[in-house]
Image (tube, rainbow, N blue to C red):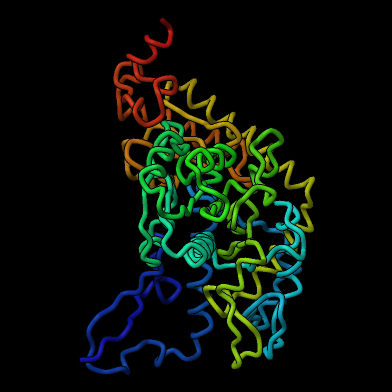
Length: 450
């Protein structure tokens, strides 16, 4: 018995259920393909599709007004200028720096974007290699693959606060992985790293350094990680450092007193996302490494008439154009202003939550505000909050306004009165998650006063 899609009638002819963020179509068993309504309504086909897309667009617009927990924004001022390029299939297959038989590419835009990041992180044109990826996960996979190929028997060291893609990559690459403890801030525990390096002195070290942990936005101190390697007698040729800078790489690079990210230090690769802070409409990222490393992966591919050292092979040729446009439109000054404004808004949110008696943490230089997890799952879904254990977070990106943060705080404080009845006496203790000083439960408030 064949299974066919059927459409639920509505006033517009068909109904689409977008209540859970998915385009849900009713499915039933039928004996004949002729029951597919599209075969009976050929004249209404365009109206049918337009209705579905209109409803979906409206659904996205509503949800964008309450998108606080996940690092994704879309700038809206490039639609008219860049939309014509969607009329072309643009594929940046292979090495960005070497031409191929395929002419419908945007390599010139890709290399311009790569040059921008290489300059930002102090690596000369003749010293770097890179490419635009599908996102931070691919960048991390590529960086760790380089580390494994250069140091074949190396052990991966990464903190427990690392993005899940690091552990995914370790499994895919069959790498031994040592998980390092973290401080309450989310930063890597250097004492634990030191101890575990000493236990494995006979094997090279592949280190993942978090330039902003996924949940708490904490910066691992790159200089102190390097110092720890030296203290454990790991010479330069016996370690490889990959920096996962997905969200906070841009923030840290434009924070005046933040620890500097630079290839003048002995790091092997950096990956950063293009769809998070910068606002590219499709998931993408940038991977930068030293040119001397890439030969170990690069292979000549006769079929396409070029070499390839990427993970994905065929690559989205539109994302480099969008990134090039965003970087040029904003410039260093515009991005600097965005970073400073986001940090100020993050501090504003943290202060409002604390004044409301809510346990809150904000790391230095961070735009990620961590606070006690709301009790109601519907509230979490409403504001699209990312939650881990007892905690939730809001990531304050450029398009998030003070008005949006005020609406969120007002809503949270109102609902909290219902959840706890009495804010003071029943505030949960989350000291283990964010530290005594950041916990607003009754016991820790009293201790802080003492």
